[in-house]
Length: 408
Ligand SMILES: *Cc1c(COP(=O)(O)O)cnc(C)c1O
Image (cartoon, rainbow, N blue to C red; front, top):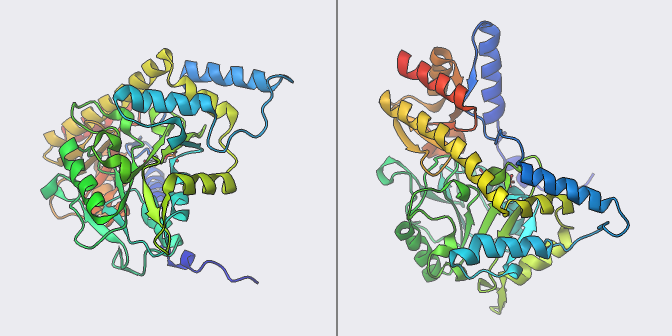
């Protein structure tokens, strides 16, 4: 037998989503007449846009002809898509990102983990608390997390998010090499303004850190002054990698396509001190370990930038945002503290009565018959909170929130 990566033993069993499912199933079995509304859905629910479907059909037809067939494509993505991304998401918004800074992939989750290949095992990683669990678990698998005690990893730097700072993280007290930031955030739904994000860019420039900026939810930003891309911040182009996805923007969670921006100006150093651009390292990593995202998915992604596609993105995200606003309004009405939901499909809430996340989950399930995601699953500072999502239908969202407001 071979020796395996011992870090896998360190990973705690993730029972959050299975436990949510188990408790819902048990409740339904005990209460057959009651309808449970899922307010914990962590996935988009509206079907692919007509413009996207049309582009996919055309791509399939092309592939079925001798002239149109495509085999392996460029590992970095087809130029038609890299150009569309650089132009529409960056240059038309006044940001100086070029096509060769863009690396198309099968989604943000893989890139977030794979980026760990290009920075040293010895880098200290900082994560928001609470946060999307992937940043922590990837760090564990790569051996950068240390040991776990009471929900805290010894080698990670935690960026505390709490009600005092409106769930925006505080700058680290310990030095951090690689800093994961996510805005608009999952799970808290909180978005960040330019002045606040500037502090992080300044920190990274001063301390020689790298920011890995997860902007999977940028398409939900509506409030003027709220950041969609970290490159809106002066100086970020030298210290930040941005990870994006068509998943939440355009309903690609099942189709798969995302991209990572690695500006050529972001530099690192080898052990001997010599400088190297992270763009060249990531290019080497991708060309070695990745053979590209499918042609059909990339044609589908390019359709998102057409007039019809843009209109559909706006309509779909508006729909989820409207649901989130209904959730937030209801929660405020019953006296909960509620965050997010304005530029995000997520609402993060607590009655602030000392009750734990699972107690809160149970109470909401048993008394109002809807499910949420316990906040403690996203980090120690998520305790006492639950996450609501705007991904159910408008009708179900209204129904669940009416139950809450009428019965609370
Ligand atoms: C959904 C999500 C992702 C993953 O997106 P994929 O492109 O589907 O892999 C990344 N980051 C955050 C914060 C997410 O919520």
